[in-house]
Figure (cartoon, rainbow over the protein chains, first blue to last red):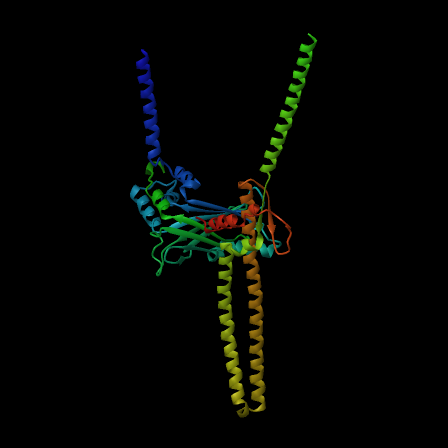
Length: 220
Length: 188
């Protein structure tokens, strides 16, 4: 092999590798729900927001409709149109996951026991997190304030130190721009953990990016 | 030969002096750099609290709640005053038994009103405490993170009682910390 041939050969390999890496980075590259959530969990995508206050780590994460639809049908054999139908239902709402965890650097204690000194306090904490949490949370669109239409506390059976709450928002009679508002301000007015009022702002452009992602049903 | 040896000795002496000088200079430079790395700043605590967007929102919410409670008290008070006025107008037409009965009812209503006022005052005090505690916790957590991220060894807080007697103006980071804190508060 002459020197010129060697240079040409190396150049070809280099261009081929460069093209491959460019093609990979340009595509969405999401092939499974787990990969999708891995993508959502990257703060750079704007779909997960965190604040550290008073020894707590407050995290608000947007849950994409594709992921929620997958959660509904996982482990079951469904036709594609069933999946699409479920997915269509979820696209009418915005679902968020609020996680209240100890800020590992400052505290290792289970959040359930913060400011709890007796059984009555503990009962109230359980009651508040299970049934009253929606009264501390709202979502501000361009035209007004929406409250959760559905909320549920994830049961961790005391195996974890954090608590997660699923919150679903929908349009109502007066506010119709949940899906079209350019900005959504998730507001948590906390009086349980002394973290005060926290705002977590999400952008429609980030929701739209994730909405375009699709994964194959056979990989679900 | 003797002159040459003398010259060599002098050269050695200068060389040793030069090295000592070099070592001292390097030592001083290292000390200065180390000193500069110890970043210290101070903030005006009260300004920080009052100009923080979190305080403003918390206070606005608290005042709105207070207005609602006050409206309830006003309604109950108006109702009570109306009943008292009505009793005064009817006084001459009522017999002793009827007067005792109405006065008992009015007294009970007044007690209930006072009880409600006290409960609201207690609730307002508690809510204000919770809201302000949240604000103070947010400020403390933010200043700590800000200090760590920006390499400060110490951030002092000044207040009216004057725990800092003098500090250079350049060490005052109140404005930049308020700006950063408000941006963080907005959650953008």
